[in-house]
Picture 1 (cartoon, rainbow, N blue to C red):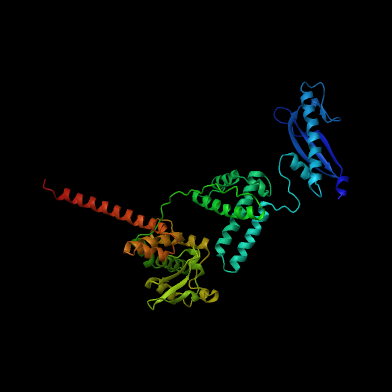
Picture 2 (picture 1 turned 60 degrees about the vertical axis):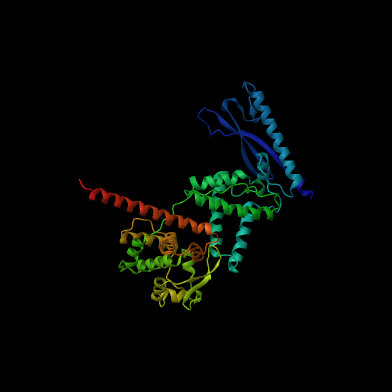
Length: 420
């Protein structure tokens, strides 16, 4: 315990001659030495080189501002020695970087103190273990891994550090992080808000792990903008279904997309489907009996004839047999890229994505054909009927627009048929 008091600490004040600014001044630095290891910190003061006494490490007396500047330099030396002694009193081993960090007003990490990213990694490991035990979906673990990378990049960008202490995390961190995601990261408002929501969950875990009094991000409100959900009309869906496609990779993606249109499955759900998910439903017909990846709800979905025909088509597909899958689903990136090609082939100007298929199922296949909203909710695996009502409003809006078009045509006919 006494050995740490034998550490030798000294401070040397100097100027960097090679860093002359536009005003012809050079910056004043403090060089800290501790047991042969050194570091430097800028004192936020500048002086003309001719006014600096190199030997004394102070301003020359002939410089009119020498008294104030030299007083400041003496104060800095005293403060640096004070911070060195503070570190000696609270740490088993002191480094020169710890003294510099403390002097600059930043918190010094204590012995065995976990950083924010340390605890985030513990959180990720627990998520991975839960996914392996099938207590959590793998997609959710992947989402938090992506978030970890974004937070790490943000800390480097904003603070020019590799990590922060949990006690340094304030409300302004998540506010700045959300701003960074949209401006530097180039992601949408709603996606940034989803990241912020996940970060709040991580911070809940961190607060418990390191015994913080509260989650500093708790009061951050995640607000979402209303997004117009894109879906295919029946004519557009027919165009995709009936298109002759000779390229096998596009044909397979088209079929997977159409399957989603008739089942309401997301990319994550359809990619995970295996023959064991098939079973006989209450009507003695073939159903999909599994839980949704996103909500975790256990659901039994009847297979409409077009979805069933697609499954039969790929029953003996090499990929499906090798990986025990119901459909030959590509990676998400390739899947969406191929959908763009399919849209071009079919003359569809809408951007086709995995989400468009799910929205098409809700609007064009179910609600537009008179399926009750409660049944649609169950079919899509929604936890809250308010989510399903969004699609119902879309259908009503489409009905209203169609009626307006009809009224305009009727009015035009009356005008044309009126006697002149």
